[in-house]
Image (tube, rainbow, N blue to C red; front, side, top):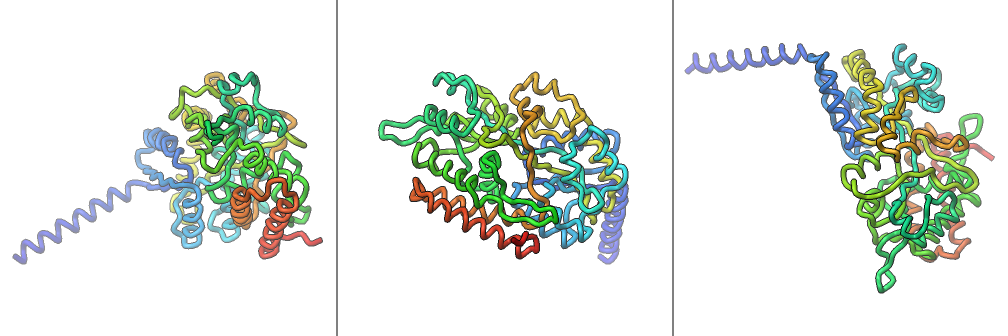
Length: 431
């Protein structure tokens, strides 16, 4: 019995030693992301990378964006984050000062700043103090998607180009049952869900109207930028579309799902929708167009970047894997198969938009369009989330219809909360 027990422990110890030896021969990296639709792209990169680097294993972990951001906020300070993070600048900038995300090594800094490779906007977005952090993988720009068949049935040959046309077209395109209930929205608005996403989508209408969520001042301070005519006009537009013109409703499906089901005629979203439509609704006839203008034309440019964290034990290999991923052929593969807009400007994407012309609006935006972005301040997520809560409640309040005083009150109180958050973070521009 003693010999049997001794033999058992010897065999077990040998297995552990052999297993450790195998493990020591492998370099394991973990990549965390907040866009589950990106997983097939990463799997393709991992498989190709391992052909020349069989000693490297890369584990991909992706969850929905809001849960992922919370996971990052907890894991970075506790030194338990993944080796590589896929995340927007505004969501992690607060971790730069603490060293949780180190500055870029010289070769990555040079790659980012190489003439023509990335936009000046991207370089500015990833620069903090005297260093750069991370490198862009893809970016979010918005367009208006419109169902060409529905438009043709109403004699409409193009997407709306301004806010008056949005209202007019949406009324023509909406459908109702015999009781007057809306069965197909003329336009699908973001009314609920997604946390701060509600405020982001409201901003798509606010900025062309002439304002922004925050006004930035030269000394790096801010103040709420929407307690004005543009802010009131934007909220009024939502209320009117809901309760005066009855072209959208909380009771209907919304966003990409509604568009794929042909339950809406048009809506605003990023390029990933094209990949979504290819997979779930290839029969739907649609196109993309520049966002409608009001006082100006504009679209958001939101960079999603790759960062190597402080706790990565093999940062050189992690960065080598990232550089492999950013090759032109994989940037083309990204937009062609997943739908997200790649960040590199020095790649020829003509093969993609010749095959799928809906991408052209993302790749070649009008010259007179403004590109705006999320301010790189720690509290911006909180600002948008709080504003979103107020907007969700406002969209449910039919009493705001033809009520300029009520709309002004909603906007003013939201702006006061925005300014209070800025004050709490030492970022408020005093009068």
